[in-house]
Length: 73
Image 1 (cartoon, helix red, strand yellow):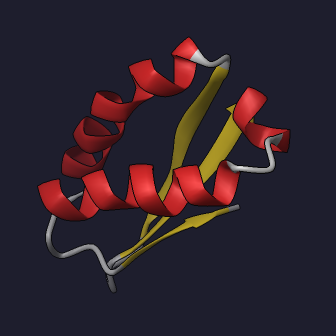
Image 2 (cartoon, rainbow, N blue to C red):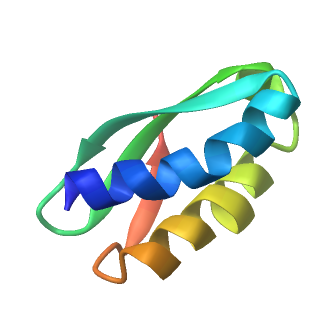
């Protein structure tokens, strides 16, 4: 499952990098919780929670339906 989540993250990474940010996969738990770390411009951006939930989480859940939630750590 971790490999599938990484592939999903890789599909959104270019959009984040275009704005000077990035995202790193930290952990995927057995109960479907993904932990990511926003880096670069995304780290301090006031819109980072919206990027996380409406962008990253949406793509991950679409590509890996077993995922319940994506959290930033």
